[in-house]
Length: 121
Image (cartoon, rainbow, N blue to C red; front, top):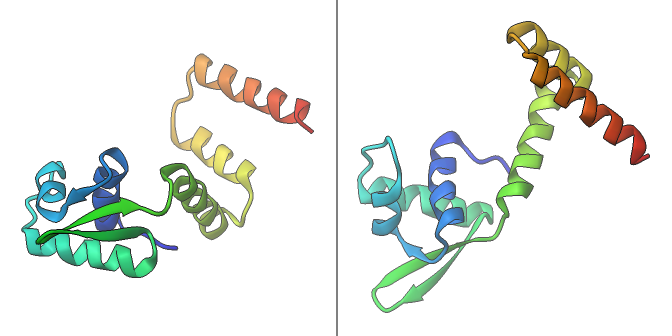
């Protein structure tokens, strides 16, 4: 399931505080000046995608995540690596190493990760 950047802003709020109404979600979204209508449109899309469930509570609707944040991250990273790096994590890491100035701590952490991955096999 693909979640857009705008939808992800909504999901971040719902993951942090499940069971909120649209107006409460809109109030908690940082860095955006979205109307309640915009947030309701994004919520409807997320419900249609199966990312959120909705329950009626009197005159309002409360939203709950159906997808865990960690599951979404894993899926999004997998798609990212597949689309941009041919599915090869090593190509991604090489690109990051070239694009960023890795500190000694970064390199130590990567080496520890590789050792742990080898040990787990």
